[in-house]
Image (cartoon, rainbow, N blue to C red):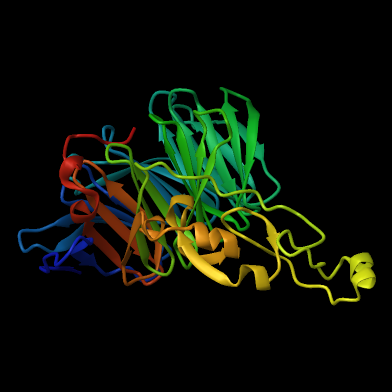
Length: 410
């Protein structure tokens, strides 16, 4: 069922502790049980399983429950031992797990959506189960009565969700690349603002309520940090993944962001440095360096009897430039560009060698990651994906040992 990996770290990289196999289809969610050697998984094979580590070092399923529809999302509240499972048919089902994690009782079904559930969050204080789905809506339902309290519809599939428990603000990412900030009330909601910056569908969100930072990852392979608390609209772009960013976790204590992409990439970003905002791209009818016309500038092409050139943009200054004036490539980590990007010749000359020092570390998960979650207090991470495998990692060599101070999210 599960193999214990005995490799020790040769350098500062995640250490694979265990590998869990047994699901018959893609694993859509895996969550570590706090203070236990256990993992809860939900899968497209219509099962939810609780895996406990045995004396042999292997993980075996102590609970194996088959659902009516493929499992698409999951939330677990450890203090009350309540599990909420979203399904492909739009329903959210609630279960209660016994103290020894050997038995799971069905509580109720919430008819939350008309289509696949994409994300779930449970608020014990409000007694709400909040969820997003491919029916283009976010819904919040009362866990006491099971009744629908409210719904808000978007123009495209709602793909991910974060929630601020103190203010009852919900952040919803969708397939159009937009993030909507909503204030949820008992029976209604209001749109506070919308955030636009991604060029692809938003796949994951992470909200840090202490620094009031929102992180978003998308199919454009990029991450954006939105400074919500600063109220100045400051955004930082992070580009280092080569595939869709699927999961995020911000470690507030060490100011590090952990991100995973669908090609198995695991990145740890140092956010405890002074970073620069990437500039807005400027528009021009001619190169802002050599003044040669771009190919749509018919008048200047006619006047100067020259062929128009293709427009590019320098990633450092944002100026519109031709290919000849931007022939160089450079990384510029302080602006989030961890791999080489197009820069104009003058910006290239201004970048010093120390400016190219990486502000992130990149590691290989060696499986298709669709979901990641962390037990921040113990420095553990679990990844799962379309290859049906669940992997448990020790992240302390990468994120430092100061995590073991008892800090835990929410």
